[in-house]
Length: 61
Image (cartoon, helix red, strand yellow):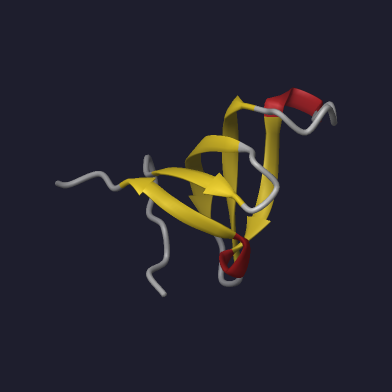
């Protein structure tokens, strides 16, 4: 499985779509762009484990 990089667009298994702001060893922190879960996240950010997302659009440098 590929690990997301900063500025990649990802979708979590729960349906949250966002842009990666920071990459950790086991997870990524994303700025939420679309949230269909009904859960409110403080500051519109959340952390998602690498196992629980797929990359939608990968940024090329």
